[in-house]
Image (cartoon, rainbow over all chains, first blue to last red; front, side, top):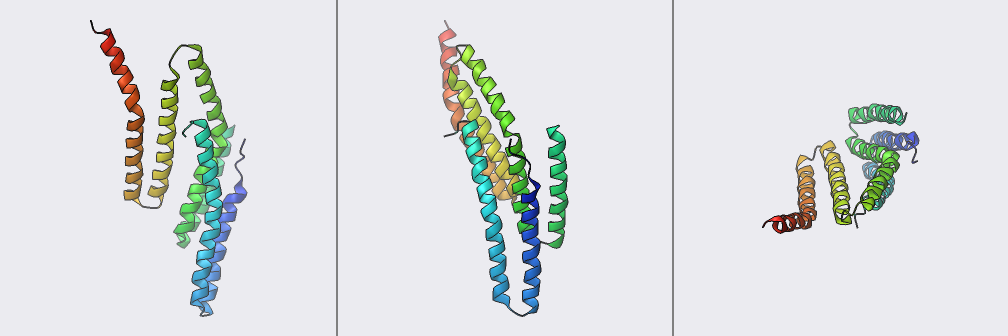
Length: 68
Length: 129
């Protein structure tokens, strides 16, 4: 039974908020490029998580509905 | 009761999603809503496995051709994935992309239905005098 783990939800929300706050700080410090890099890094981290989940979802669906 | 867990889980996720959208981080909100959808499905998928196994045993009993159940399961699978994809796109306010996914889903389901239609027509022709 794949349990409904809340930590994944909080992890993604935390990454999003922290990245955005750091962005504001970087913009104050005048480092525009770093803040854009940081946004990219944040999205990439969250995407890695989401892609793992999507691949698990699709493999489950493939086995259940024998969609080859 | 599992349904209570699912509802509580979704409420907490919606609160966080609303917070994210309020602050303007819609990118993360879309990703988070996708994750919520996947987690709820993964949570319930094992019951679906039991239902499909029961259906399989049912058709194994009778001499019904396995093609029908197989195609039925494939159609349900395609419909579910197309629905999931189009809802994620709708959540990201991309109505056109969602429409394209649904369109592709319909075509693929039609493709799967053709052999069954042929079988039905064949059996009807055999009945005619």
